[in-house]
Image (cartoon, rainbow, N blue to C red; front, top):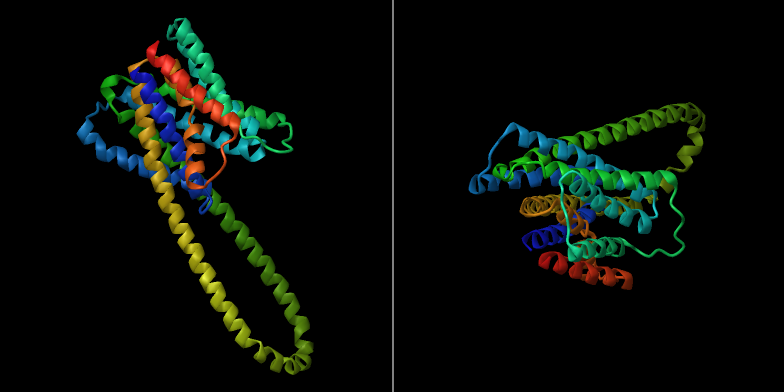
Length: 337
């Protein structure tokens, strides 16, 4: 019962983190949002570790670091496949693969077994994962092979994260998550730096090209000085309008800066929620079977769509309501079984 409660709670907190992180990514780059979230989550873990206690064994830290690599790759593939689309197919495909991968490992390698009720509950939970993550789209196109492969790779990466983090000892406490978040933060900031470098180089190249064009135009403009003198009065009369436009541009720049600051705060908040979800799912993995924790953990879209409905007033599709009901039923069956 404890595993089901912890895993389902972790899934909903994961969904909340995704929701807040999505709002942050609308204001700052998604890569920077991930990096900032990883950093804030790492700081939160370091602050609570002294109170909770942890064993810093090299083996546990190594498992945590490997889990961080797997998780970072999985998130990168997830963003890439969702950008290709359609989300209504690739998102639930990712979630299902992320649940099946550790479930197969748990049965084949870990020797996990389920009674009749548990088996039915696992099947019901997998159906719920598909329905909760399904977003009906009008005129949705068939996904291309590259998008499908990325979705499968992302799901396998998330499942691998569960498998790796489950190898840590109970005595390690949350120490493996410190290694996980450290790796994610380093990789995230490295990616953000690489993206910023590419953008700066493109801007520099564009500025150099513009300067060359302006120089060429300047030579021709020398012979047109008389005509330009005649237009000076018109230019002067337009200066007042230019001043007004400058004030408007200043207000726009201030609004953009405020939006970026809010994006940073949202990203930091998403990182805190994500770290809490990591801790809940780690406790769920240690309290019971890997298969149960992974399948219920894959229901994270439920938290996202519920918050979107409450905060953004987005409509929850009937098929998603069915998925939510099935998810709760599956969790209850797993808790009893």
